[in-house]
Length: 356
Ligand code: SF4
Image 1 (cartoon, rainbow, N blue to C red):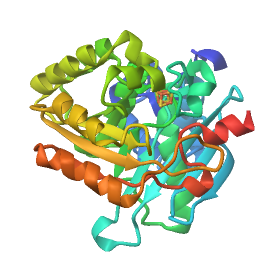
Image 2: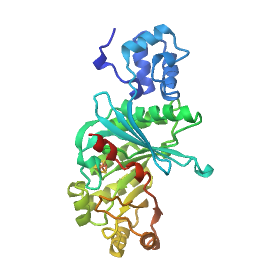
Image 3: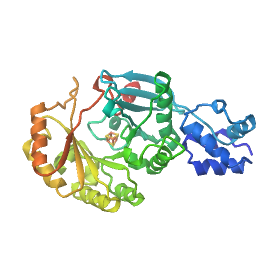
């Protein structure tokens, strides 16, 4: 039976067993599904005709039952530090972004990390975030999440045939836990043996702190890294910069993190953007230390990069180190991280916001 264009699923968002079921229903042999899945996810094909060992009849069947929809590239920007940012147009003309962070200059850190978007816009309205000013438009499908990686793989492999994706962070536009089913499905496909084979521990999912969704994710017992955007050591400050804190204040969020750790046996990573004169004082380090005391957690301190029009300024290195030292003395696992690609507006939502 020929399916109409609207109801044909995106092949990039189908797990192997789903593709197999569709092909068998259309009269194909089950083994074809593995061959086709490999073409889609290992070779990142964008057209049935690129599948060399697939005959004309099978291509015709594929055409009737599924669609393949590469993203339309609107911009690729390359930073001085090697970070690349891609602005994509989706089929409904909405715009999303993906960031590629590379450490290829250093052989010990030959790692490419993709920062993926999960929604068009975002409803969470964090006040330091360009995406937060756009409001929410819609969730991305699993295929659209996969497409960001597959299309970048194809673009980069033209220049560098050995290019691979090593790490994924669900930290681009949108709140991943509000699109959890598509996010989980995409993780399973990225992790699959017939796909990109990205190790589950190399996949990070970030949230601004949605307590019910953290509990739901804990039930999945995945070995992914859960990252919590904390950014403030007390409710008063967090209320001001992250509206989600009014609904899920720290006294609800931290116990949810504790439950997550107990259920999954995994450490949680807390992200804390250090902002000069706002959350970088000694008292804040003390508050942060007592908040995270006893939690099986890592803390990333990220001194923000100052932008000419931003009200937020970067703290000096000496005060960043002092802040980090105070936390280390309290027994916390602290790492200072750098924001990348500030010269190409790599922070989430900056390019899409401008284009809109
Ligand atoms: S930081 Fe993340 S959760 Fe907050 S508004 Fe931006 S995209 Fe949404």
